[in-house]
Length: 417
Image (spheres, rainbow, N blue to C red):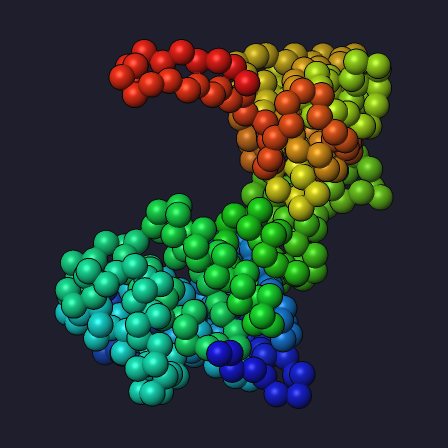
C-alpha cells in the first residue's frame, strides 16, 4: 500500500533550501566560544538556495562529488536535519534509507528496532503489526531478529533499514549510498523492489555515484556542486557535466565542437574523427562476434605520451566495455603538428541492439588526470544478428558443455559448443 499525494500535486517541493554547519578545529573550542563570546569556528555552507520539485511517479537522481551536499539534502528532506533557510513541502509519507544506523539503537533487538524505526517514519501500531512478518521476511534476518543490533554487521543493518522503509507504504522513497553496503545479491533484490515501487507510481529521490544505476532508474537528474544545483535535467546530460567536474574541467574549458557539450578537454591533443570498420570496410552495422577496428584520427600541438581509450555503451547508457592503452600496457606517442591514427581491434561480442563509442585522451588510466579530450558518443553502431553462436543476455562469453558418468567426475571430457 502506498500513501499517495493529493490532487496530482508534487509529492515534494523544495524552495531556496540552505544549510550551514559550524566547523570547529577542536572540541574544546565550542566551550571556549560559549564563554568568550568570540567565534572559534568557520562556517561551511553545505547547501545554498536549492530549489526543485518531485512529481508523482517521478524518479530523480542526485549526483555530485564528495562534499557536494547530497547527503545533507536527503537528511533535510527526511526530517533528520532542519534547514537554516528555505522551505520543504511534503505531501504524503516519505521514507528512506540514509546513513547506516540512522534511527536505530544498538542496545535494542532487531525486532524492537523495527517497531521504533517504523514509528519514526510515521507507521501506526496497526501497520507495524500487519507488515512485521513481511519486513522480517524481506530482510532475511529471522534467525537474528531477537539479537541486539550491536551484533549485526553493516550489511545486516542495511537489510533491516531497507525492509522497514520499503514496507512503510511511502509516497516517496529516498535512498542514499547505504545500498552500496552488503552482498551483491541483496543489492539486486533492493534495486528490483525500488523499480517495482517506481512502476507502481511511487516517487524516488536517489543518491548514487553509480552513474549507470541513475541512468537506468531515474527520469531526471540533479547535479550538485559546492552545495548548489548546477544542472537539473536529463540523466545523460547530468552525467556528462559530472564527468567534467571530476576531471577538473569547468564550463569555460575549450570544446572541440562548440555545438556538442559532450566533447571537451584541454585539447592540446585531440581526436578529429572516429571510424569503425568491419570485414567489408567502414560501416555502422555489424554482426555479433564480428571482428572490427575502431580508428581514432588524432592531431596534436605538443610532443607527448598519452593514454588512448574507448568506452562502449548500450542504448540505456550503460557502460558495457571499456579499455585504454594504459590498461593494455601499450604506449601512444603524439608529436606537434603531425596526425596519427590510433587503432583498437576487437570482436563485438554484444547482443543485438544500438551502441555508442566514447573516446578519450588522457595522461593516466582514467580521464580524471590531465584530460586532453573526452568525446562522448563520438560514433554509433548497431549489432544486427549473430555471426557465430546465438546467446542470451548482454554479451557473448565462450562456453563449453560436457556430459559424463559421475564416476569420471575427476577427468571430464569437454566438448566445445
